[in-house]
Length: 121
Image 1 (cartoon, rainbow, N blue to C red):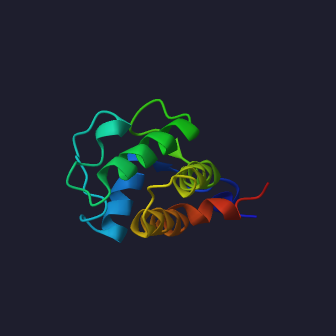
Image 2: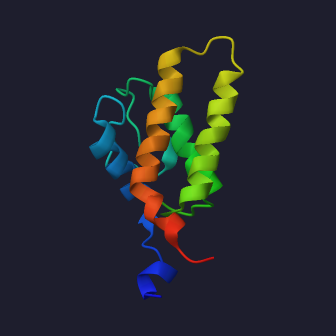
């Protein structure tokens, strides 16, 4: 086994959102690059600004981040996004676009953090 298989590369919280912005575009995930906390990393110009900010906070908390450079991991991140999806699915006011946005976050997360799942348990 190689060292890379045992210790997958970690992605910091800020870098994770930078990669989301690169994959999904600035319409869905426009970043405030100087943000000092998860509530403000996505700007108010995002198509689903409130949902994107809520996702950022949930990902931050689920990964027990202590700062913007703290590592995020695949499964806690997917858990946070999945819980948010369940929450909006239960809402009477949820539109299909919001669900599709969360789905796109999940797919992008797999692309960004997917190599972490290949580590040896």
